[in-house]
Amino acid sequence: MTAAALSGYRALLSARYRMVLQYRAAAAAGIATQFFWGVIMIMVMEAFFAVGVAPPMSFAATVSYIWLGQALLALQPWNHDRELEAMVQKGHVAYELLRPLDLYTLWFVRAVAWRTAGASLRAIPIVLVAGLLLPVMGGERWALGPPAGAEAALGFAVALLGTIALGGAITTLVHVSLLWTISGEGLARVMPSLVIFFSGMVVPIPFFPDWIQPLFAWLPFRGLADVPFRLYTGHIPPSEALPTLALVAAWALALVALGRWLMARGARRLVVHGG
Amino acid sequence: MAQIQVEGLTKTFQIAKRRAGMLGALAGVVRREHRELVALDAITFEIGQGELIGYVGPNGAGKSTTIKILSGILVPDAGHCEVLGFVPWRERRRYVAAIGVVFGQRTQLWWDLPVVESFDLLRSIYHVDDASYRRTLDEMVSLLDLEPLLDTPVRQLSLGQRMRCDLAASLLHEPSLLFLDEPTIGLDAPSKLAVRDFVKRLNRDRGVTVILTTHDMDDIETLCERVMVIGDGRILQDGSLADLRERVSPERRLIVDLEDPEVTLDAPGARVISREGPRWELAFDPRVVSPAQLITQVASRHAVRDLFVENPPIEEVITEIYDHGGLAS
Ligand SMILES: Nc1ncnc2c1ncn2[C@@H]1O[C@H](COP(=O)(O)OP(=O)(O)O)[C@@H](O)[C@H]1O
Ligand SMILES: [Mg+2]
Image 1: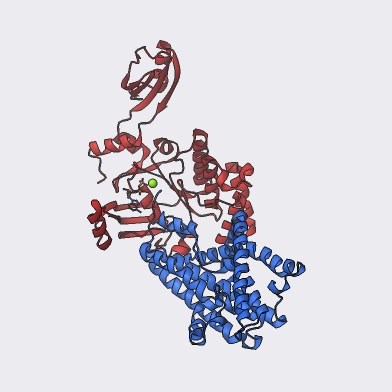
Image 2 (image 1 turned 30 degrees about the horizontal axis):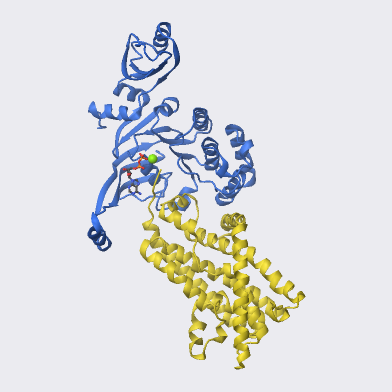
């Protein structure tokens, strides 16, 4: 695609991002929940560390991992866009075909805008409180620490792009599956558990037993949370970043390809109601 | 060469039948029974550059289905169709960049955004260069009187305001062909006039080909030279407005509201169709008695609160075409 052809999608991305930002009240409610979960998870981890088993990660790194997870929860493809679902059900999606745009790219852009707008609303207050306010108030032990170094910060930033791409691809895949009423609902229902569990959002992946680690390593979901968070804390050293990030990129591309293929088949099922 | 060529275009919808009762619902999960609904039954027509076509027919006749196929968002089951040299649903992206479409029942603007931001987005989507965008936008703003609306979010617009903005939006990329599906539906009288006036100028001054669907005969009267009548998925009549008039009776309607509900209306040269309290509906043949004559006579005999002249509704026109064996040959 040429740069000129991309300008339309770029404009749509920023417009939709701004539209989602308008719904600030919903985010405010979410933030309180995320603080609550962050605190609970840290308490559970504190108990685990007290038992004295050799931990796979330092306590400080674990705490940072947990806070990053709460700050960036909205990037996780754990739910789907109800507005888009309604458009599919009412048969309004076909009207998007009136634009000289590729329908898959349009939906991908929409998903990315939705995720990133939601995440930016929540991430800033959570990072401010967990990273700056907690230490000032004497809660250093429970605070989000800084990145392990300049290289770690860079690795984290790149991995975050991977998270956005992967999250966008999985979200769009779920959205495309909604074109098949029954099986689509199925995917939309199992995806949340898969995402939350296998990304490391419930229990940081290093805490799982060794025998199951290869499964986590090869599944795509790790790129959503575990990879950027461990690059941040330095638990994955910058020297090992490249192969890990390459796998995330490969997964993102594969899921985009799968989504496109499904979309091409599903487009035939589009019905246009009304008018 | 014709800008639009349609031959034998056919579209059938499968409608899932509901079965009665619990057992029926269970059986439906396993194997759904379908009923077929023929929305378009082998329609054929040609439209040339610069024409302004009225596409009329009652609700459910197949007007929107035709527009959806012609604009590339619905695929027909059979038949051939070529518009601006494209097969709409095959070369959709390149094709839709060259046409404008407005569906009266739904906006294509972004609900949450101010009108002007929707316009800016469309400019990016259609890659309109700055100079032409400014020129077209200025022209639209003055022709459709959009200045006071530009900063309003679309959700806050009235139907008439929204339609004016939708019309402008469909033309920002300067298409040479415009599809309007029921652009006047639900509009108040001044908005209807504004839309009609705009469409007429667009066609006359810029040579844009316009295909306008409606079930309002007044739209056709004021706008179109050529009228295609569709009923039950078939083209019943395709010709000039005068042809259509000849085919159906030229009768018009006069609606009179009298001051006194008790009095019996006396109107020579007119036939009473219905009466509801003080409101009388009369039919008359304008070749026998002109509307002016009739109104003068009624007003001289009775105290009149209000009165207006109407065309018979499209449903009756269609029925007449059927009754007079008027199926297009
Ligand atoms: N998506 C659809 N599924 C099933 N039936 C449809 C669908 N769209 C239109 N129809 C049917 O096709 C016929 C023609 O509809 P339409 O073209 O919308 O009529 P009009 O625009 O002239 O009112 C109607 O009987 C309508 O119910
Ligand atoms: Mg219609």
